[in-house]
Image (cartoon, rainbow, N blue to C red; front, side, top):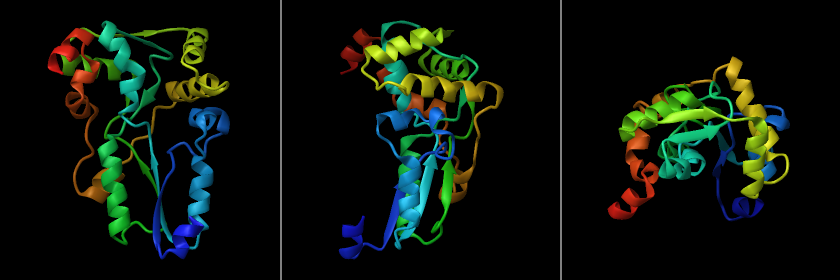
Length: 213
């Protein structure tokens, strides 16, 4: 960042996260190296013009979390069926970032970005079922099974506990929904259903995806 300033860069857009002010024990991405809070603080103190985007869970995360499971069958297994999220399309984040770079409208702001609606995990699977025309089911599993799965996938120690804590927090207190995407872009944020339809082949049974490819 210091080098950028010396090269004449005047403005930066930091990519933080909607939960960057939460206790670190509920920030699983920290266990994979993300430093959302520090990045935002550094941007604000850089002396450059700055904007910090605080998106919620990226819709594309579900390609990795659930795509393989749905290619193999009609059941998604995971923690806390009643935990909620308001996934945001990655393209909406990119458009807001472009606006932040190209206009002065958002300077000095920390902007929470979400999709237009919050769903439980079970509700998100139901949306995918409607889009795909399949009788999908969300099956809640124990915390221990979740830890074992993340361990097999090579996730760092502590990631699973932070992920479970983050999920549990939204069981009793639903995920926040903001309308900053609408305000900034002058159009509604993309719905989870619309996003899922664009990526439907990534959730299709393996043999179907192979035929399409």
